[in-house]
Length: 163
Image 1 (cartoon, rainbow, N blue to C red):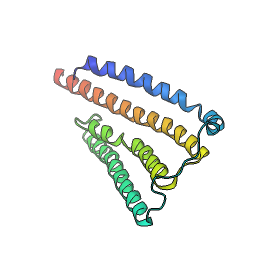
Image 2 (image 1 turned 180 degrees about the horizontal axis):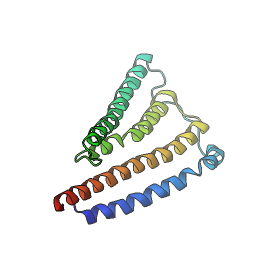
Image 3 (image 1 turned 30 degrees about the horizontal axis):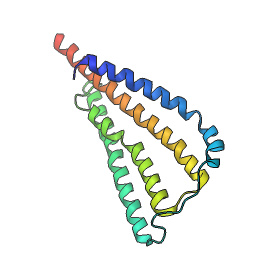
Image 4 (image 1 turned 45 degrees about the horizontal axis):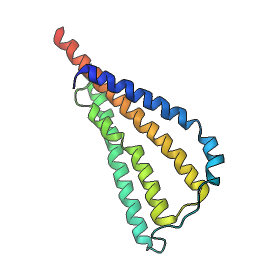
């Protein structure tokens, strides 16, 4: 991917992140207005065994741990590169891209738990909408940081080649 196309992606992703952050300021309004318009609903599998709920929660905990480990690998590689005098380690941005899925996993877990296991009431649904906006902003912010890191790595490599 060329530097020009990466710059275009940075512009779009930065504007999306800014828009989502501005929308996240409306959380107090969402908590006040939205419950009046949202109906309560029952869970799809309300009579399931507690073992199934435990298996679902364990699966999400393991997936959460996997994406968290992507951040740990990113920072370990970053600190190793700093020992050698390199801030921008080639191939390190992919770990940020993978770790960016962590907030989206949280949204999926809340939806699965609410819709399939416990059901939803008005305030919980309003909180889910507010958390979804926050998590999308976090996802796009982490992706923006990964894209900027990737772009800076390319620029750093070009500078090393010209020197």
